[in-house]
Image (cartoon, rainbow, N blue to C red):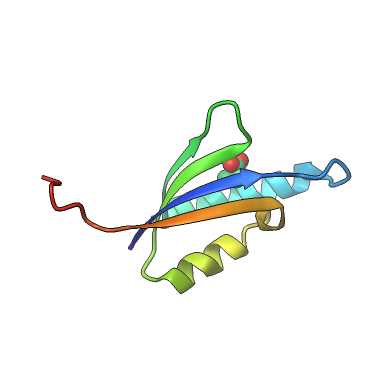
Length: 88
Ligand SMILES: O=C(O)C[C@H]1C=CC(=O)O1
């Protein structure tokens, strides 16, 4: 199943961001290499991204997203995608 995901990151000023961001980057690379995180785009001018995930179930996507190091500081919006009838 394909999912469109928007992640908005809100790091409080008292959090040491550098280690979390490094851990997040390492995990994002792993998930891209495994084929589960198929697109990752920065939203211009925002600390946010648009992503596409390709995972078998809603539960697996939830497990992936909720285990991301920055998850406690993210607002996440998920849109499950279905095949469009006009797609060629
Ligand atoms: O920077 C972000 O958008 C948040 C998150 C997503 C991938 C990553 O490395 O960090």
